[in-house]
Length: 182
Image (cartoon, rainbow, N blue to C red; front, side):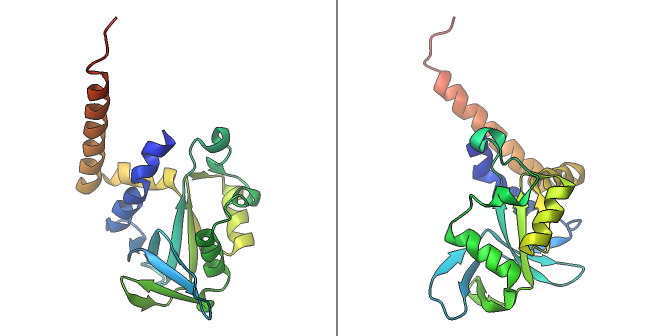
């Protein structure tokens, strides 16, 4: 289930950010280099907060079934400790010291104001603790993003989900086609 959802979860965030009701708009995938360094990391989103006009790099971590649902709901800061890849470090660095990062989006340099983490679901306490301890501007939950999309019902979202439902049904029907029936 988590692998199927993971294939298109990023696209749900893009559709959400494309809706006029959304407080953010997605500017594209950012590539981050710490000033004075040569290693680069590419994250999932660059989110422009419409009200404040601030810009944030963002990464989606939606680990539905990983380790028996241990990371489904963000409830404390230690749940982030198993993320030890360079891209996640770049996200954390962007949250703590945004001016020390060089960020390119679609080949153009963009000044960022911090970072946003997107998680599957959150508790209020876990969300606040992660924002406070890691310096994130916001921690968004996929549960809330999906609830927004279900409420707003943009045509792009409805078509996107219907297409995936149809493709998945067709795939599993084809896989069963040659199986003997009981």
